[in-house]
Image (tube, rainbow over all chains, first blue to last red):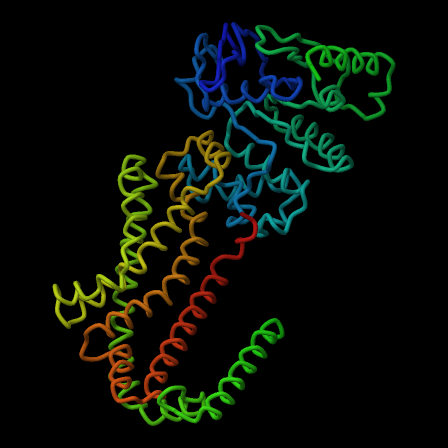
Length: 250
Length: 247
């Protein structure tokens, strides 16, 4: 379980706090989204979780332990695929294992297993430039999985894709989540995406924020896109958009 | 081949113009024609290819080798340690304001007519593009890629080997391609100023004999060698780096 306990943070170059006394938690194996307007601090939460930034006050715990004492508790997948163009697909996804010193034979086995699961086994020797946008994101997801962490931090991973690919990738991601039993924390500014994917949604309304409103999505898995047309879901989407608009000043 | 056609046509046209002008002036000691230069190159083939070309190539290769080693060392140390960057960067840039041709005689005064004075001139002309271009390459890694590696638990050394080196590799090749012609120029200038052999020395000797074609022959040879070297490096680069445009 991930817990933020009274976390306060401000970027040194900013005069305004990003978050103040923020507390929230995410249960194991949950699919939770964080939504909010651009610049509200969604990505900062991820930077704090993966240790790229340190909180000014408060603590971040994973399974009851401070993250400073832990290793490989979370894996980050950014908006851009950030695949290394000089590495083949398999070399790209083995990168986290290489850094952890996993023996090559084991790397190979796990790489084949995951590539098969994400449907890219035939592409293992290809280079990123030979792949489509959706494929690249799938490779980036495979790389995130192979870091071995139980908590995946996905920062708007599909926002750069065209609409149809995005819809396809969302269904694909749910399938992967059900298969791998990981905790997924998903940042997006797309309300529909958040509703379709997650069990719960945290909403950031303003900056600095000291709480995020938690909204449960009344849908079970597996889901289909027609669920989004249900009156209660359409109503939920409207309510979420309403909450976000209050925080946006034009 | 086809993409080189316009430049080949232009060169052919300029050569024809030159040939015409030289034939019009008809004073080979002032303006020898391209044909006369080629004939002279053939006549002088033994001293040029057996004595003077090896001497100049020796200086060039030696100077370039030391420049690459020195340039890489400077680039990597400046990238590794920001304090070193602050100390070294301005000095390296300032070193380029020194007019090499003006201080080259000083090197000959210090180190004599042997190979070292010429190697030093070559190094002074070539280490700069290597150090600065490779340093820029190392610094040019994407911040987000570096952060991604950090989230995987990468150390500073991991980041250097797995991210910075591959990113800087295309820059390294550009630097070497820039440095090859410069090193040839450096060696030739140094030989002009004081030497007992070498293509620069040979060219100067021909000038004192008012042998226009003889002055040009070693220059043509130098250009051809430099172009061939750049061609070979480009070929290796293409084999090694297929992802240049992706960065």
